[in-house]
Length: 320
Ligand code: F6P
Image (tube, rainbow, N blue to C red; front, side, top):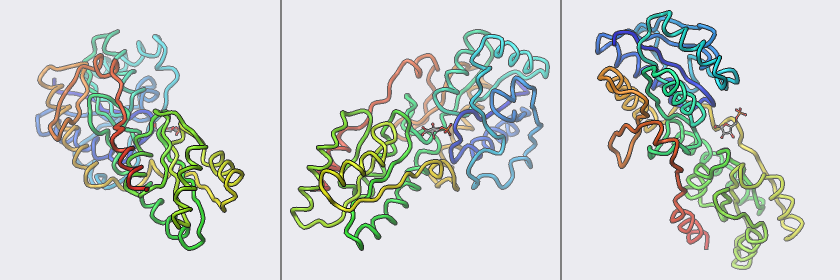
């Protein structure tokens, strides 16, 4: 292989740029030219290819978002869309594709590989961290740091005014960000979609703290578990405490990637290129216990990544 392409797809995640940079430079280091595809799978079908010399990825390692832009493509979900995509790649004599994205994007990569046998490698990037066969997806750690920064700031004003604050974080149907940021931020209660949600239980925890003299509290809720506004209204109605809420939203997707995400993205980008050039295909690279691994996409997407309930228990113990 001497010509490959790279795209970013789905929700952007801090560190995607570091991964693009790694793919381009790892390719060049192995005498392989790399093409960028803009706007994810939409751009692939529309033929939005750009040459990526080393200079194209200069000064992006520290930038959030994705310089190639992204999309959630509806047409790529169709057979016709994927036929068109492979046609675009073949027309440009591209011999391999690297997809940087979350579970939806990796599912697209798997289907493209299964239907057309096109050489493909996936790199996990999503703030949600819900992708199996990797301990971390690119962007998760930065999103946790962003949420934690917000929790810490809110804690100052919660303390001063003796209020309860409900903070809603992202994560779709998963509680990884909520659990990690809630544990680090010392939240008095954490709500995640993986476990049954009881607002009565949240109130009981807040009340127990109150009776011990705790005048302010933070509740972290994952968007897939309960909305901040609903928890806030419930707490005010049931306990009569003064409560406020905030929804962190898309700010969790932005910002400069932390060192961990930059290094992970760099290592995974390099490995994806190495695997692809050595003939591997239909795989996703990832990390496991600090080591790099590569797993068939078909296996990755058949797995489910469980939440670490020990961390939730620990967070509860710390809130006593
Ligand atoms: O998958 C990343 C994510 O940010 C989720 O946490 C969130 O539910 C979703 O994307 C939001 O998607 P959109 O940017 O399309 O509103």
